[in-house]
Structure formats: structure tokens, C-alpha cells
Image (cartoon, rainbow, N blue to C red; front, top):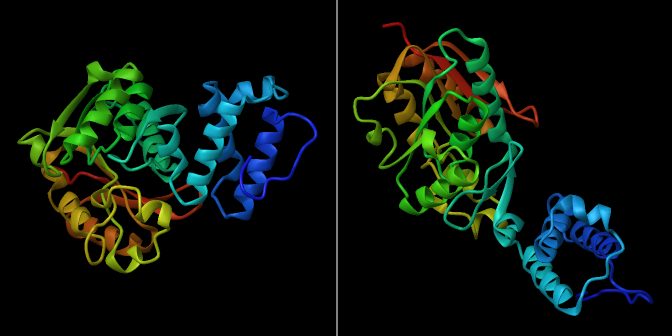
Length: 297
């Protein structure tokens, strides 16, 4: 297979390739080694991941092994697996991703799940107008449109490249007719428009925390989608300060941030007059999502 690969008497089957690569990734400290191995091999074989287990003894051809070996070596050199295969799992979808957009993270699913449940259980929110600011790949906008059938979403981003990716994801997930993609900086594309829900996963990594960011993120993902200024709050301050101007009442602001920013973000929301300010924990039980109701009137 690659450098350091043991010799086998039999063919390199799907089963053997997965077992060897998973162990190799574990030794090299790759995140989610089994999942990463599955994604790469499924990509090379042009099959779904389930097929790897329904046909585990399928021998790989020389060309397939060569292609797989190349991707494996790129992965251990910190190139994100999601970019290598061009797709990323998010909220039961497989979204298109490349170096133009940030790779969606599981923590962002906390934000999406909250909004979906809020819309379902809150009177007057069954068919909400949602603004997703800094949409990037469109992960949040697409997930909300797909899971709230009557929702309409305005998805904004300063990057025209990101909006191109978001457009593809909206089309592939069958929700493009309910997503309005707009280019511009933060809240600018909304003009004077008001929405029921204002959500965002903006850049929020501080200069100090940037030094500790892993190479697979720092060297490959778009810096502009990650860094949020000296304390990481540059964009969050604007969204909190001016977000209520674009919310109807009742309405809700829902923002993702770094766990280290919990107290600062909550304080900003309270100072801006939002009601019922609270913070949700993500899948790792870290404080990551601000939820704040629009001020009355």
C-alpha cells in the first residue's frame, strides 16, 4: 500500500485496506481514523461507505490502490480528508466542500438542531424567514431549509467563491428555491429587511488561539472564515450589536462562538438588550451557541 506497509499473501481487499489504513492513521494521529479511511476508500471506489461493508472482500485494482495510496499520504500530511473527497457529512447530508469554504463541524449541528426544534414548537415560527450570515458552504442554510419545509432563508457571505459552493449544495439538496443567496459584508446584504431568526457561524478564532490551531485547519482552510481579530469577537460584536435591527419581535438571535468566549458573548447580548440570553452546549458539552430573544418592540 505505502511506506511501511506489511506484505500480504492474499490480495488487498476492501477489508484489508480499511484495517491497515485505520491503524496507520491512528499511529499518525489523524482525527476519526476509521471514518477517514472509509471516506477515502469509498471515494476511490466511487461507492457509498455502506458498500465497503456489503462487499468487504472485493480486491482493489492496481490503479485503485495507487489512487488510494496517494490520498492516504496526503491525509497524513494534514490535508483535510473532506477536501480530498470533496464532500463533508453534516446533519445527515453530504455537502460539497473545497478550499473555498470552511469544513462544517459537528458543533454547528447544535445551532441547527436548536433552530429546527424552536421553529417546530413555537407558535408563529412554522414558516420562518431566516438569515444565515457568513453562510460559507451553506451548511446551516441548507440544513434549515431541508428540515423546516416552509422556511425561507437568506444566506449571505462576503466571499463570492463561498456563495458558489453554497449554491451547489442548495441545488443538490433540493432547497435552492427557498434560499436567497446574497453577497456582502455581514448584515449589509439584509438592507432594512427583518427576519424571524438571525443565525451565524462567523469567524471567531482569536489571534492568541490561532497559534494553537492544528495544521490541517491553519494550512488549508480559508483564513478569512476562521480568524475574528485580536480577541476573536470582531464579527460577533457587530452581529450582536446590530442584529436586533433585523429581527422582528418575537425573534431570535443564534450564534456560534468559541468556548473560551462564553462570558464575553453573553455579556454583549445582555448589554445590547436581548432577552432570555442563554448558552447551549455542543456535542462535547462545551458552551458554543448563544441564544437570545429580540428586545421587545
